[in-house]
Length: 439
Image 1 (tube, rainbow, N blue to C red):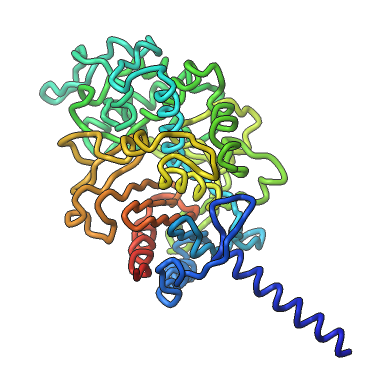
Image 2: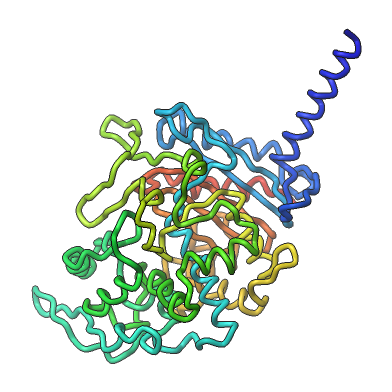
């Protein structure tokens, strides 16, 4: 009996060490892990409890069904935890390795691929995209004439830089918050433009062909407007590399970085790890989205990533991923383009990507845009705790990341809800991460 009890005690102690290892001690390497506590990284364990409180409260109030949060500093993970349910109807708890539709968090990966090709000497950033995609030459621009819109010839060509910075004049069908964008959304809808969020029989080359027949929102370079520009760059990657975007990502980025759970399309057994998608109900609860939704100018589908067609590779919104996979990507950027001895970019190129590339234009007060990320330029105008030089982005299904080079700090928040984050849960998460950083 004594021997048996000793074995039980040893087993319990071993399990305790494993839990600490998983939640607080993961490092960059997929093969090796160094044990550390949040305090070793200058982060307060006591204050980190606020992350759990924030998310659990949102779950209790049926804002979300569940979430995964990751916080890393100095290249090591201080927090990796899962909360609530991945699938309420199937009684499936959220797990640290749950897979999420990351939507627009695909864009930094496509931007990375573009800059890898840039480093290889295939183009200059100020080259017109029509050099490679001639269907995007000689475009027209929407012009308001009295109560109607007219089309005028553009006097500028769209450049690769303008596509990277969303200053190309290409819009999104689902963004119709101004009269001009509403008119263009109607044209996009009539042309059956895909935003990359639902099943389609087309390829991304078809998107470029269609956009070549439609007007721009404004003269290239004159304004900032979020849109399908990065999807067009996905097509450019295919043209230059001779690979599909999925093949390029897998062989040039995912395999080298050890991102084993990031894909455009997934099959069993990974489908069972894909978190369900939820939407608010009129009663103040949340309901699972189980089929394609067509509403006004937005179209999205929870089953897109399980499609049997599997040929539309949206560089702007098409990927699924996990917190750990995306952490490896972000740590590569924070390291200046290298991870575990694998270099994808030079430090100079990473600096190019993470600084202001839109001049006097703004994403929002105090926020500029780099080459794939929003970048904080004036923290005093932002209204939260992000410091100057922090870069970040998110996805329409309620995901968000940020990288703060000043503090060597990374935060990732993943949940699955549409529409929007009215409660600003993602922003509150970022603030809590900063308030937990004490050194």
